[in-house]
Image (cartoon, rainbow, N blue to C red; front, top):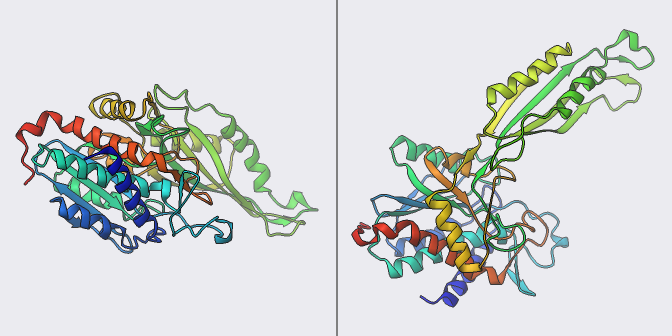
Length: 390
């Protein structure tokens, strides 16, 4: 098929997906739309819905390697509608951009997955190995009933993946300048430091937990946790919320609550980070309770077949020499890495994601789909002569 056609078909499908108001965890029919296209291509579809979350596992072929495209149909809320230049769920074009909620994060990637596979199968209907898609409507929300549930299922029945491309919008300034070959871990804490409430004019009769916490807080904020690694920035510890008081200016609070988060490199361990925080709090003699929540472990895909294949595909389609990065927040790659040693994330420019007037460049449609198609071709090239898609 001609590359101009793949761009047109990607744009058309992206518009169809944007028109479905799939605010997390709603899917709004996106998976049905994609499933119809995949069924015509000979994929076996398996819905793995959990609660309000819609999940799809689709596979064509039974052999190895398994090349999987992963992503999410759900989007974040629109924000004030009157601030959008057009209805966020009516895709519109203006000055070379396609506008709509989910345009960059990540319905254009989903459309490009489908058209890339369509073009690849037109040339290689009897391909070797397997092609798969893992799609969910619970990535922008709590991510408890989405990708992780499909991974649980695949793990339980011994169905690991060889390569996985997650369609997150990773490009910074121009399409192809950045791929994510890993992510930092995320560990959160809810700390409550207890004091004694009292009249602010009689501090000797009370115990101010804010004052007690302050030295420990300063120590934690100033600490250098590590220097990072080859691909990872240093581990960071950040406070996100602090709450105390009754609202009156003459009452010493009885307790203060602090919410914080670690984004940590693989040089750290979860137990080590927890122990370090407790040691600081204990040393300062605080009366406290600390509850922990781990939302993701770090993962890394070093240079190898997947990184080399997608880097070469990007260079061929855009002329850009891509950079590897592990910066940014968490993604569903953290779950997939449990059953897949090689996971990368790649997609459009991310400057407008989650913002008013989210958009994607119209001229990114064709090269994005070409990159996915060429990556798939390179990963399955050595197996195509002995293909068995049945």
